[in-house]
Length: 599
Image 1: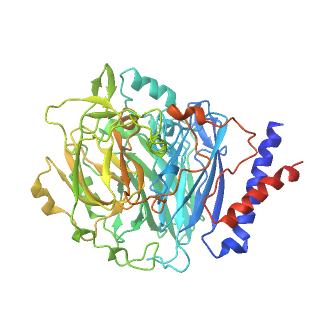
Image 2 (image 1 turned 120 degrees about the vertical axis):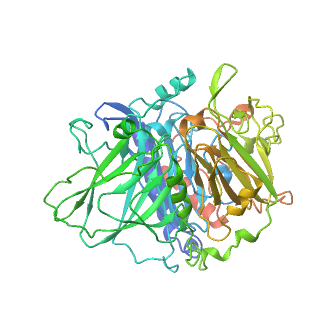
Image 3 (image 1 turned 90 degrees about the vertical axis):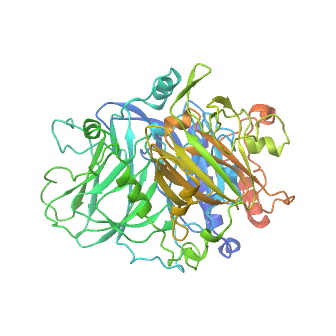
């Protein structure tokens, strides 16, 4: 019976997709795209040791979600894990709908053996992003996949159409699963050196018989000589910045997290945790043999780098020989961050290219807008708070309330969280565990300065927005540091690095109402409290013009747990739509007809 219910669910989802995508009513408006994602455990041995990982639709990594600009995306997520689950959408801006963000500040978790349907529009977006679990270090066990938004045909791309599209998910990896990693952090231990690096869920090619054991399955990327490919690279790892390079091939950077870049060539690129880059790579080398694709740890000793290195193979279609020679060299610096800092600031926005709209990206002159507020966030080494290991922003280690912030607001609940997050680091060096968030002004234009007093690079991420990375430096940030800001063609993105002993400054235009997660993408630091939320509310909005209302299929927990619906038959795969009344009528009719179809 359970398998029949599940079959009915998937069949219903297919029928709904057909109705929405081919209905004359919806062809004139923005189309819908439907996806089913089932997260479950499978056993694999990416580093030669059998372990349990989180698969999506029985695949590790998960399938690519590929949609077009302005599509309405409906994702039905099934939780077949033995613990709560939420999926978040790294870099997708979720215009007007933080309800769909998939983090604890906005969503109650999906319980085991249950499903929940996300719906959001990829309004005015293009580019390379990824999805992943947001709870309890689950991403350290998998559950991730690429999310690609392609241009509408009427908008030209600023380069010749590639001959193919390749996705590479790279990341440091532990043979311990996310539960064991959680236990280590909860007991006061740090995670230690990763056991390796995976490329598309597979371990390293055996380029060295001493460093790489026999029997590991590696990734092979098949290409044709003379062709140019778009290669999208996402760092979905735990905490390690990785240097990405392809033996003998030039990487022409073309896009990053939704923004076209100036097309500069690199021999290698540092990709920090949570970041995504798109390269154009022409297969112009001797096609008689294969080549190494490498992702290796940065800012680490040589012995650590030898261990934390992933290697895949680039295979020309007429190749007859294996990759040979040593791996291509990474940047020579180990603890000096100057190379990485200069490279990061060399990445510039292509201000003459159209993005998702038919106008140049540079038409938004961010450098001429007056800053309305400034926040300085200080990152410090791990500390003990109430006898537990914690990480902090401005001395506060964030504790998620039992009731999500946006849900509490919707029901006018008080005392769930505080809006007293300090805009500057405290002078007294105190630390505390708290539920403090930032309440910022709608349509404000703010400056956020991140100062990293920790000994490792941190990745800083803001949901719901892209920000302009206007400056980076070493040492202390001062008022005079603003003189070095790039106020014309700084890259706009959602994740940026903050080097140890340094600072990074970003500009953010607060035009997206909601509650948005601001966090470290380093999973251990995120888990230990290095996050907060930004609450942006339009005080003049009383009829949900600038934010969509609470979804009809909202989950309830915490102080609102009594509103939780009784568990229904899982055949109701699609539960809520925010479309025209005609679209909703079609959905209701299909839900009514479905039982007869599966009778």
